[in-house]
Length: 134
Image 1: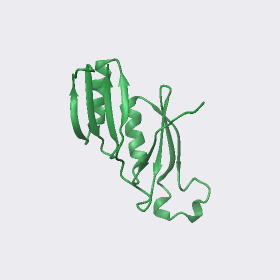
Image 2: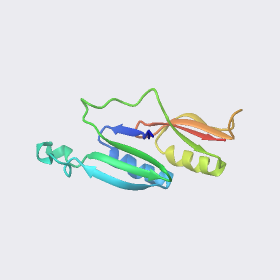
Image 3: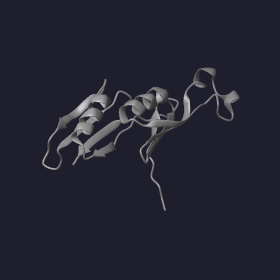
């Protein structure tokens, strides 16, 4: 059996992003380790030791992971979006409202021919999201 788990790359704002997602999705951060806490911390630049080496967020049975990457290793996300699926229109609206904080909304939450609610946005951390409520 294979599990596919999204792992997000951040430009030094992973902790803020994961705290934000924890609130937006009602999940729980189950693991968060800084570079300063990781093996080999003594070789990490002091200003980078507080950045996140690895974080795990659990939302129901789903898992989202991520970490911070130095500018020479970081590529801005593109060519994908994380899909949030629900069959509850009120929940779709709640999540859209939460994720929309300082986001770039590509398509406002609305009824489409395939969904009672659908939206697309890029959140304040540069992560693209799609919300689909069937």
